[in-house]
Image (cartoon, rainbow, N blue to C red; front, side, top):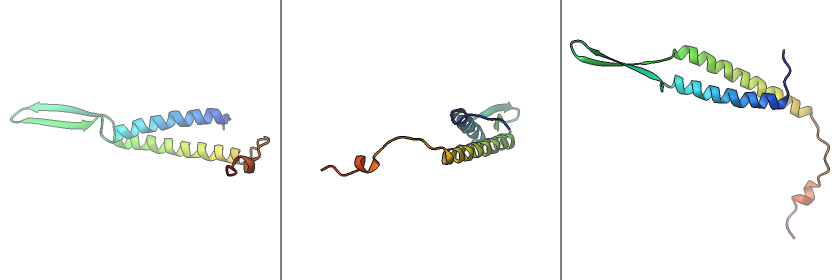
Length: 96
């Protein structure tokens, strides 16, 4: 198991979310290859450039990692305390 700082994990999360979005675009059929056949009658065939099952497996892996990262960050933040003097009631009070 590797150790990362919270900032490193947040950066990785952002990069993985971008990667996941790109994979989901591919899965949605946005990337296709068009072939034309001119035998007896013209025929146009569009086929996905990538295997949808492989993309779906990658998206699932990324989603699982993102979940584990988020859970680990939240668990660490739940026990991390910050010492700072703030009078919240005074700052959030109505204007007189």
